[in-house]
Image (cartoon, rainbow, N blue to C red):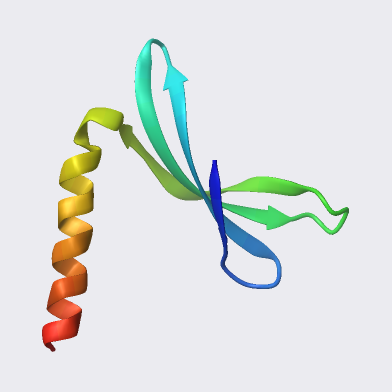
Length: 69
């Protein structure tokens, strides 16, 4: 699991999980429930691990477009 602090009360977590025999990549926002414990939000996305290279290509393309603007 990798986590990036989004703001004072939330972080973005990226995890590889198995669900019904399928490898998934899960990007999900987690929030501090004010008891020093993080809980998952509804905000997030999960996709098959096999498409991760395509997702990374899309993100790199987005970054390149932003730099060119």
